[in-house]
Length: 335
Image (cartoon, rainbow, N blue to C red):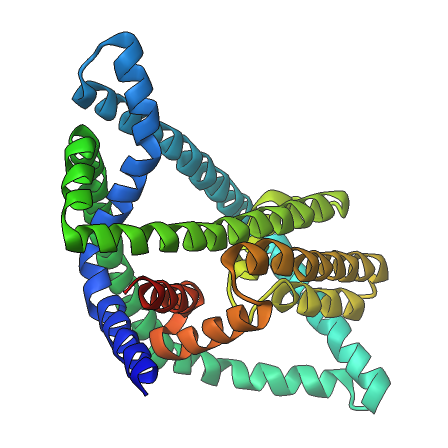
């Protein structure tokens, strides 16, 4: 009963902390993590080149920002180029969509006997009503969502600058901050829990990133070999989709393969089915080895923690669920 009470108490404290406290302090956690990663480099440069620690801290963070800026700029440039290409070929795509719709109606006629012309006329009659519904309901909702997204981007930029400034300040006094925490009883326990959580959580994040990059590479190569002119952008999008729980590559490739089959493009449908199969097999092989073993959790516990996390925390539960499990386990073993 004592152990059960202890576990319940820790669980409540961890849940409350992650639910309400974490959003307030996460920029400083991220800054401290970046400072921990950059600190060994700063120490080496400080000892060899004899410049002030604050100078090297600012230089390293600036280099990190430059690399990140180049990567984001390349992605945005590629995205804008793809959007321009779509707009330039909009009439072609409209014609292709019309041809595809006509082929689908003909396929339905061949399968169930309903005339293609009847289907087309029935759908065309519904189009004005659908447009009216979109104007009165969907478009205002999209405008409201756009405003919310704009506010979110503004908040994100502010948090980003807080992280950067905090990283520089923490790097400048990293030794003093670390020494203060290690000499304080509560700080000592906190560092011990954070160290173990960092090791396990780092393994989780690292494993997910490795799997995502491998899946993305498979998708990009497969789409490039199939002749898709948007192979890079589409492959990256599918790779990100695969990292999301309960989505996976099948969310994109299965409907895509079916659409290609309806158009009579059986080779493309087969290629997409093969890419989907390879991605699924790679995740099935890599996830238990990379994730389960390093995390110290059996694969079933990982899936359960993700599922429960999604129910409790929403979309971010795929990361916060395993983090909650790790924190409860490490705090229980420490105190």
